[in-house]
Amino acid sequence: MTAEQWLRLEVVLPPLPVTGRRPWDRRQVFNGIWWRARTGSPWRDIPERYGPRETGCTLFRRWQIDGTWARILRKP
Figure 1 (cartoon, helix red, strand yellow):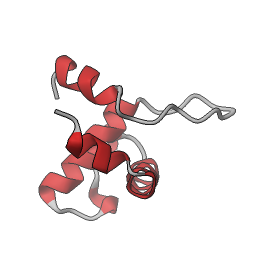
Figure 2 (cartoon, rainbow, N blue to C red):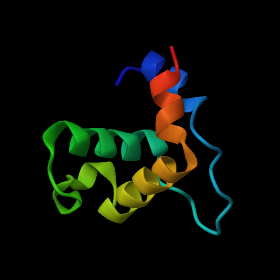
Figure 3 (spheres, rainbow, N blue to C red):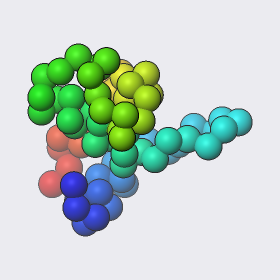
């Protein structure tokens, strides 16, 4: 994903939740989710460079529930 593509996508994503620890880079995690969608692999096979698979799975599911994916698909 190019920097320009990420800038356009980032405005559609919900704000980061406030937690006691530093969150993973969302672009990195998004690329992991995208990798899984392209390959059809199970979550356990996501390469480590995309962060913990639990993080990717949790964000994917959260964004599915809150409508983020629908907003991404509607964004021109």
